[in-house]
Amino acid sequence: MAREIGKLSAVAVRNQSKPGLHGDGGGLYLQVTKAGVKTWIYRFMLSGRRRDMGLGPLHTVGLAEAREEARRCRQLVRLGIDPIEDRKATKLAAKAEALKAMTFKECAKAYIKAHEAGWKNDKHIAQWNSTLTTYVYPTIGALSVDAIDTGLVMKILEPIWTTKTETASRVRGRMEAILDWATVRKHRTGENPARWKGHLDHLLPARGKVQKAGHHSALPYNQIGAFLKSLRAQEGIAPRALEFTILTAARTGEVIGATWQEIDLEKGLWTIPAERMKAEKEHRVPLSEPILELLKDMKEFRDGDYVFPGGKARRPLSNMALLVTLRRMKRTDITVHGFRSTFRDWAAEQTNFSREVAEMALAHAVGNKVEAAYRRGDLFEKRVELMDAWAEYCAMKP
Image (tube, one colour):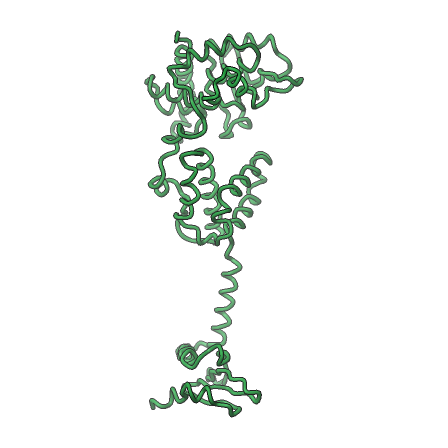
């Protein structure tokens, strides 16, 4: 009985030249053609029907491998499965899996295409493409999205996390969004390696703790009084816009785009519409007494809708105007955006106002409960007190 399987030897297989089928047992045959080509055949009976299944040529499939494949086929037949149909199904599944597989770059492009209609402008799309092209694609762009792991994500983020913190944070968020999209579309499985909470927060310092090491050099808050004294000695619209920026702790773009329609001098309120805000939510800024005095003076320069008009008719100041003012003052050691950090440091170290109040003054995203409170108006009243205190501190003699 043992001789029914394994009848052929390696030497016999190599030397066999007679055309026909030469059985090894168990349904396995070496087929030799008249031209001398040798191939393996597995012959079986299923549902009363005889079938022959090719296992490959001898030069590719050796005797041992042919026997192992024949053994696997016999097991399928015993289970009532046709090994020929099983092989077809396996190939189809592999083909489907290959079609389903996408590179990270392909997923990124698909994600952007799916969401670009809901984004506010072409600049936003360009920013996504730019950050991905610069920081992400060189490392993982050509890799299967299912192969992206924490090590690869860290390889992208670690070199820029402390030197370009804000950019690195955006890169991480964009990778996370793309990988989430790929998971939902079944191009990958498992946890998202770019997730912050409960994952990367254990590997990288919080953004707020390294922000000062980034590219926005800030003036120490105990020097703000002396700086403003020097700033007020500068003539022109740009210095007034910079003073307004400092006293409101607003972003440059929010200030130079400010219009008189957004300003309510009687209520001491500046309402910035959602479309001009980074977080895309309306932001109310309380105006302290020094700001109101500044705005009254600016009315003398009124030329159109912009509070801080530029050199061209009915156009605002340029993005560079405030930075140029710093350069004229020979203050190349600080940046305009850095004054927001100055304000934040002062609020944290010199006042009893809560972190949430300061974050809301900077129009940073905060928790849902705080946001709900803000909508009710109680945080706004606290921010009025905060900005008045900031104005008083800035007015102190150096």
